[in-house]
Length: 167
Image (cartoon, rainbow, N blue to C red; front, side, top):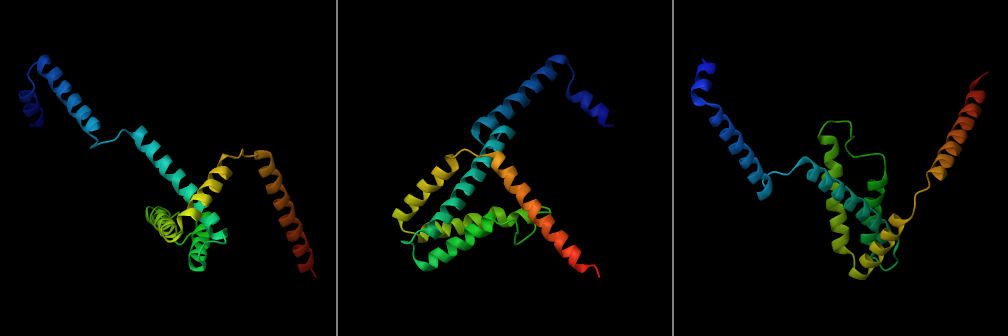
């Protein structure tokens, strides 16, 4: 039954081409007007937003260390920066959808609150320090050395602990 209906709607190859052109032009209009975004631009927007949150989290860390920041804002900034850089979350990330809500909602709200409560001269200085730190080159060799050192320390501690448990 559906086949007969679809055959009646489109009778000739000319009509098929005009329908394809109509659909293409509708999609183009949707993308150009901004109602829909192409996946590439959406991914770029998400990466840019994640980079802004990372920069602002580093800014809150420097706000917490600045002596010109009021003590209440300092404590709040320290808590937000620690939560942003901590591997422990309020809601674990392995829980689908809800796991990322704390990262998507709580962190930006906390960062915005810290930025609004902090004097502008402290924010400007902290943003400059954060930009300087982010612009520094990253040494992967140093990271490997640090990780290997920690693994050796933990294994030595485990060996000593294991050795002490035996009778």
